[in-house]
Image 1 (cartoon, rainbow, N blue to C red):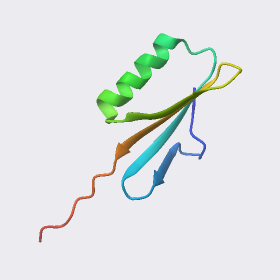
Image 2: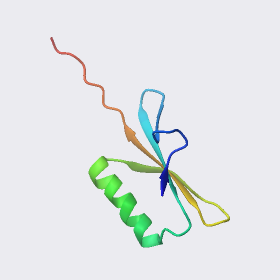
Image 3: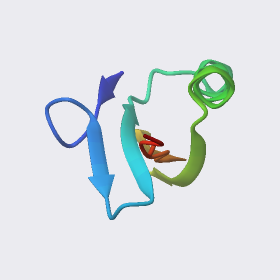
Image 4: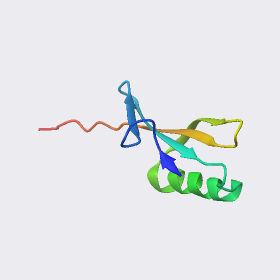
Length: 74
């Protein structure tokens, strides 16, 4: 499994969401992929934005989560 189109695997778009792109190779089982995405959703607060399966069996998954900006109160 490798991460991202960018070197660090993170991408920010706009001011509302941050994105993470995961690339799963064809040897990754369906149950392992499901477990990985469940863990990311539960502990990292990521949600599935898009997924794509390529002809060779590789899968690319886009995850997103809201960016929470904290404003100063003082």
